[in-house]
Length: 186
Ligand SMILES: Cc1cc2nc3c(=O)[nH]c(=O)nc-3n(C[C@H](O)[C@H](O)[C@H](O)COP(=O)(O)O)c2cc1C
Image 1 (cartoon, rainbow, N blue to C red):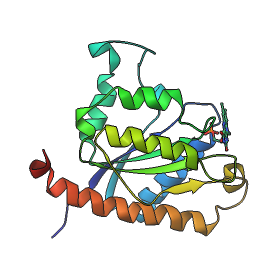
Image 2: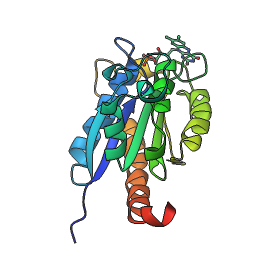
Image 3: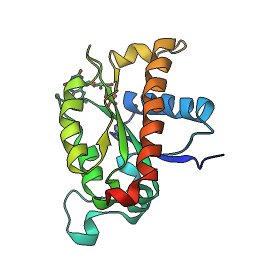
Image 4: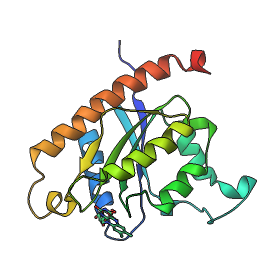
């Protein structure tokens, strides 16, 4: 029996110009659209796509465009840079603008850094946030270390395809399990 596609929201964790995280996100999106076209329907979002003042209350705190995307999604994939061992303020602001609709949906995380450990320290602190938002954080991660060498002039090394595919395989399984049991989990 043919199953519905999993609705995947890919969240880019920065709006910095010429961001390597954006390149890494486009790389992930490209893999989804070629190898996983029958599994996922993908949409991508960056913090600057939305009208989110730094502070706000009630309705001002969220942007209906983002709320709709969060509600639409069955799964999330966050690709985020490491800034001073943490995640960006703009990613936190975006994630904080919603609450209930993240619950019991899986999230994959990829860290991006120019350093040698691929945003591992950022990922550790982002896990606390995704947990508090009620997402189910996958065990497998992608660590885009020395990122400027990955997305240079030449073809991306196959090892990075394999790492992203491993995470997408896990994300699709978790998304199906959780989607099929969402009512019981409420
Ligand atoms: C404010 C700031 C802080 C940074 N802190 C770190 C860091 O703690 N560790 C690291 O490996 N790279 C650090 N970097 C370098 C980023 O990892 C690098 O810019 C990488 O390309 C990912 O960020 P991007 O998506 O903005 O390009 C920092 C960059 C900025 C702009």
